[in-house]
Image (tube, rainbow over all chains, first blue to last red; front, side):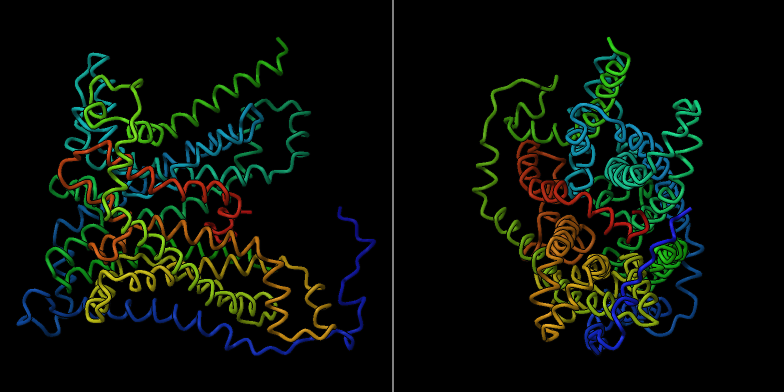
Length: 306
Length: 273
């Protein structure tokens, strides 16, 4: 297949003796990065692990000492952990479904040639660059507000009752906001992947009489498989710790209805000052993220072969 | 009409409709920022009104807005410079003098990025409290530097690898010392790559809202924290919130649009090309 007639390895043309090789001690160059990242990762993680086995409350210095697994048993028998866990997974799952589903369709659309495509694409990826506190507040106030919001106005014009988004569907509302923020990410990555598809392959399929649908299902979607899995993994890692959107909209409420694991840890640590309990929850969050990270690292490793 | 042309017109309508729907919340925010507070909450919503710059004037006159904006700039630029400074030597060594462990090292660096911040919130908070780093700019600069270091090393590494080795070798033949080689050949040659790496780092710092909400209150609070304070009293002052938000996101939106290609490389760690 590939032409193998003219293989000229650069090093073969220049005799090894004449190449000027520099002997650089790489250790001092790499060490700063490695050391600071090591400290950043290992020290706090070890402390979290240590605290999770301690009685430790910031408000009550008289409590202390080794707790064994008590923080964990307390946490695991506490229904709020399971609520938070369920909310976390629900949020991750639905945001992934929305962003990957719509993202794929939009990527196919923006791969087509149409008038003003590059400007339309700029508009479509804009939400990704809006800071989370701003996007959460735009949606909360100007769009989803039950009295003065735009959605309430549309509902009333159609003769429907206005929906109290954050009162009745707090988690769903958060999901809508987060999905809006991450849709451009999926779109951008998947569009890049589609554009790397060989145009000859597309042309050949078209010549063989492939319609738009068989084109999508048999050529484009299989090609996108890898990119979709990367989008899913990277989004999952970020979505497991959604925080600011909940912080400014629902504060986890009503009750625990929109509290995810990240927000629960925040509540325990910085509102109730229960360092031990919060640390145990932190360890669980780290384990959850690592399960995904293992797969992600593997698929990155495949690409750093050269 | 030619079927090809009709197809293109339908695609144009679909594409612009999709883009318009996605962009709409931002458009609506920008529009609201030019309304008066009364018009901002009016029902039915006003699409046509006489625009006013009043909100921008109010936001600018409130000295603390400038204070938060300066915090955002100092923290993002500071963390980006610091991360680049630490990352350039490492990326240089890994790109041009790879060893057996280089790949593992690179993967390990990226894996630190995958640790959830909440997992280390408590120790970092306590360490910062004891060090007096809560609500200080340098505290947030340190956190953001470490947060983005893996991505910065990774991106610089891929950009350095694209620099033709022959040019560097020619420089060596002419007797360039290692320092000269880096300063006078490598850095100028990979300047576009370094610039887009720095841009991505600034974008990520500017929009970061977990550490800024938890580690700052007022003195060192960047714009993310400032905007969050609008959520407190049942979202009054929509027009002013919109004006403050519009200024807060404008520069980053432009940066993001400028660097959208390189963004894919940085955000997927090269897993999608």
